[in-house]
Structures are given as structure tokens and as C-alpha cells.
Image (cartoon, rainbow, N blue to C red; front, side, top):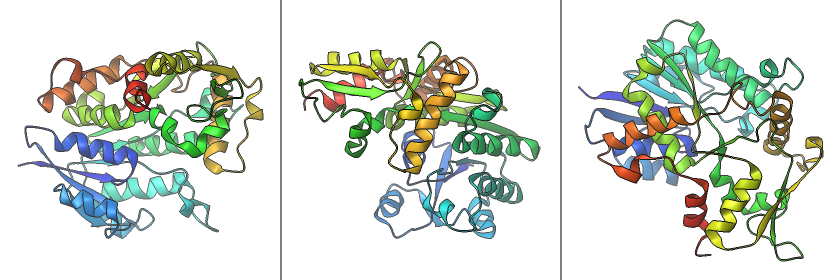
Amino acid sequence: MAKLITIFGATGAQGGSLIRSLLQNKSQEFTLRGITRNPSSDAARKLSETGVEVVKADGFNKEEMVAAFKGSWGVFVNTNSDDPALEKPDAPTELELGKLIVDAAVEAGVQHFVYSGMASAAETTGGKIPLDAFDHKHGIGEYAKSTNAFKTVVVPSAGWYMENFLIRDIAPVFGGFPYIPSETGELVFRAPHWGGKEDIPFIAMGDDFGDIVHGIFLNPEKWNGNLVQGVSNISSLEDAVQAFEKATGKKARFEEIPKWQDLETYGMRSLETVKGMFGFCQESGGRYYGVQTENSTAAELKKAAAEAQGKSGNETTLLTLEAWFKREFGSK
């Protein structure tokens, strides 16, 4: 009998990446269910057309979540720190929302709980730089483990999305890169330094993250209790800009913002998190995951998932920044 995997956040970037990966699995080992608040949306309808069972449920409604999780061998959950619903008066925190979802998965009898979490900024920096998006996600993963109700709990953690470079509206925040040239004609990426060894974990969300989580589901017992670093390419910002220049032939350079507190956020919650992330990483010596950044684990999981899809050779390896930049910007 096929194992049912249910995805909370099925129409989002992470859930979508996982679904695309699992749909390519040649063994037909898994069947898929996607949870959405709005089954009539274009994204939900397109998902249904791929053969994914689409069900309506709201993460804030435990009864709906229990029903949506029923019969699931495994679930993947990604809570959105920037969900406008979390900003409503008297709304629960992300941590409270996550605990409700965990409790629903326990009640539904889920065996394998995979949560897209984070290291704790507060714990990693000794309380110097707490950061809600990191600390709440960390707390959700720890709560899932503490229930002792699942056979396995695994916490994949996404790095810096390469796809963020595709968002034109964000470009002015970081100096215009990679869309708006400076007065000298260069594309300038302006940001604080990362800290430590400048080992920034970049993730190709569309290409690699889904495969990494797919790899976890192929052998969840092996990864039980672990935070799995979701990393395609480890690079400094200077080297990332050089990779862009090499891939596209366009002149580009990195320019440091000396104080991370000076990153302009325009009052946007998501950018406040980004600013805090730079502070957290500088204070922790670049330890975005609370430990040294590595992508050998991600490479192993990527290979396992790709081989389950019938792929071989270069198709089983993680994407580099240079290759991603060449594909996305090389002909533009």
C-alpha cells in the first residue's frame, strides 16, 4: 500500500518544491495530499490537476487539521512567519500555531513528522539577539519531539533562497542587484556582512529543497531528531556576486553596510526578520544553524531523491549559484 504524505503549505514555495519532487518518484511509493485554505484558488486547482488530493483546512482550526492529517503516514509542515493572519489582534503566535498543528498530527496518528524549522537565535547568541521567526520555528520542532508521539521527527531548515534574487521589488533594498545598475553601470549588492567565515547557506528552493525533504521521507529513521541543513551552495556575498558576474558577463560588486542595524526595512515584517538575521549571524560567528554550515547531508539526500526519480549524473547533484544565475539571468 502506498504511503500517504500530507503537505501543509502545499501551494507555497517549500510545499510546492516537495510535491514536484515526490511526483517524480518512480516507485509510486507515495500518494500525496495538499492542504490549502482556498481549494478554489488557481494554485490549488493546478495542484489537483497533477493528481494531488487537495483538502481545505485552516492551520488555526484543530478539527480541520486533524481531519486533513487522517490516514497520513507522514506530513510536511511549513508555517509562514509572515502570514498576515498572525498579525491580527488576539492572533496566536507562530509557536502557538505550530503547537496546534503538532497536536492535530498526534491526534490523527501521523507516524513521521517533518517540520521546516530553524535553529534558535536566542539560544545560539546566549539571549543577545532573539528573533521570533527563528525562535518560534525552533520551538515548534522541539515541541514535536517532546510529544514522543511520532516514530520520527525531522527538521529540515531552508537557507537563503536563491529565488529571492528574482523578486524585483526587493532589489532596491539591497542596492539594486541584480536589476538596477548604479550610476557607474555596475550592479551593486549592498548588505551587512554575514559573520564568521561568511559561509552563507544558499538554497535553490525550486531545484533542491524538495529533493532534500523527499530524501528524508525515503529513510526518516536515519534522520530522526536531526536538524537537516537545507543548503545548495555555501558562499560569501562577495563570491555570490562574482558568480553572478561570471555567469552573466555583467559587472557587479558587493558593498558592505557596516552596521546590520542600518539595513532599511521600510517597516516590513519580512525585512525586519532579514535585518535581525544578519545581527544573529554576526553575533553567532555565522552559525545560521547554530553549528557550522555544511551541505554534505543535503547532497546525500538530494542524490537519494534524484535516483528515486530515475536520474543520474549531474542531475543528482546540488545546484551551484553560478549555474542558477546562468539559467535565470544569463540570457537577459
